[in-house]
Picture 1 (cartoon, rainbow over the protein chains, first blue to last red):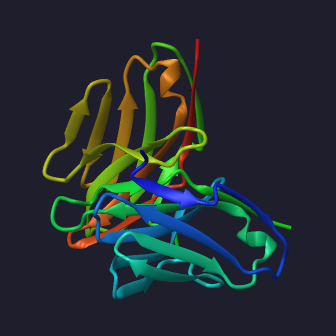
Picture 2: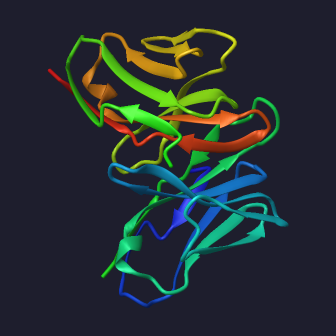
Length: 114
Length: 112
């Protein structure tokens, strides 16, 4: 079974709609992250959370919000989707602490905003 | 502001050849440099990583070379195989800050 799961895997929506992408992990990690991947731009950090009570903006948080419902769950919302939010979205987790920089990624959600 | 610059954007190498991907960073506080490998339809996965106390790290056919004074590091894939065809991302982080700053990625294709 996958340690980091994302739902849905694919989503097509229309401009202005509210969308939620969900991430769950069974690794027992405290740290969770949301990235978007665009061709030629690499992976860019949207939001990250180091524990349930900690939420931080990444480099491209405008237009997005997150919720850390539990240690194992971290959701990303697009309140009013726009076409330039069409991208591949990844959730990742890490253990945290010295020597624990490794991030473990989910399989991704391909989002298309028409 | 791109703190980690990666090149080339795409690379085609013949089977058995050496694949080389380069990255340069600006932030001198970075002290952890991983490479991630991503296959189509999958999330990135850690391939190999280095800290600046060594200039080279080798794991099987994969080697990271690190040049602290030039603020550059590179991934070398020896005896490249078709199964190595993937997108490779370099990244960097600083001590005590677990956020990774990623490069823009290199799409590697190994041809028979």
